[in-house]
Length: 268
Image (cartoon, rainbow, N blue to C red; front, side, top):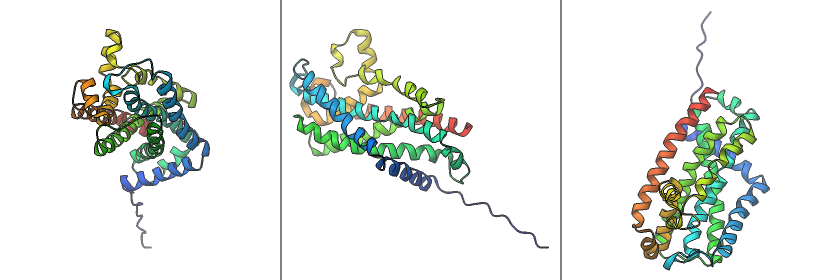
């Protein structure tokens, strides 16, 4: 009796697997109108509130408060929206999605990378809406179209980097409530930054923390690119300085938290 050779299923590539899983998550997002509206409205509400509530009380030199605060709100709101990744990861695990995906011949990291890519793509919708709203409340570019496009690209890079922070938090959380709590631990970093007020106005200890944390570097990069010479004069460094710092922070966040997340996922 002839023996039958057993052929192992061909393992899908990381790129193809990530694309398929990202597509599944994107379809889920667009088929949930509540998520689409939340992503659309949340950032605009914060933008309007800060623009008109504090616009006459906080000075930002020649840049003006609207030119100062819009880059901060746009950057931090996308980070806030990224907190949903922690909840989504716990839901996928509770619904048995991880167990089904582990049975497939795909790289383990593709499951998490697909989530990060999909969430970053959905946040690009919120970014476009907030950009349009920014011009409606008086924001104007001072650094040229090329610099503005670079700023938008950087915001998406930051969003992708922080996605891995929230994915890791979701994998360590036991349930959705715990995931939400872990994600909100990062909220102070958006406030203890240069998002809403100049760092120079803070007390010494708080100023040191705000000036040397990743959110501030990211905001200052966007602010310098969109604010042109007025922003660079206020910040004290050229845009290239902040862009380099922000990209270094982004790379470090992805390297550290993606490694932690993948290791946690592989342990089950």
